[in-house]
Image 1 (cartoon, rainbow, N blue to C red):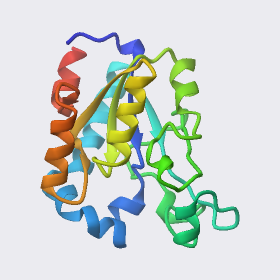
Image 2 (image 1 turned 90 degrees about the vertical axis):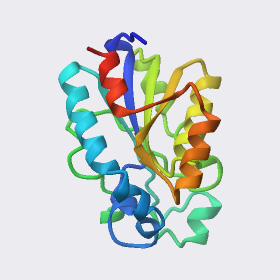
Image 3 (image 1 turned 90 degrees about the horizontal axis):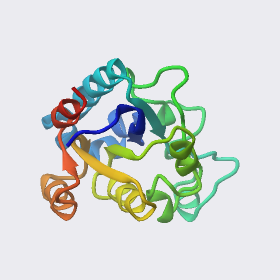
Length: 194
């Protein structure tokens, strides 16, 4: 697979401290996150991709407790991915000034898709991106739904398996099987660009 780096981006879906540091969400993915070295793999991928000129796009979820949008934002009292708190901060080593950010403020079932009311599609078109490599949490939820939407909207999306994590190995493998042919490792992605 040979791809034009100028038409390629890595989309980091919810690569935020809510998933990678203390708390319930972290405990839900901790085993997979650590055993598969997801943060380390993604930091390495992003650093190498930047050297190759591949764009990095962030797709965080940020919930404003004073202006909750979506039924899950109300259900969690705005205490998940909370605006202006450590929970919504990017994982260290991934964000650089100038990186495009397609922020989602809605927290409901539709918002498990990074395209939902975020401006992600407009950002991709603005940078002439056709090939999307998706990393993030939880694999079978937000990244998988984002991949399906990207495909429906005419993009060429892939799931970067070793830069995603979910609740257990069964769900991880199931998500990868469902998207067979659209799953790569970070190493395979970098090899396509050399």
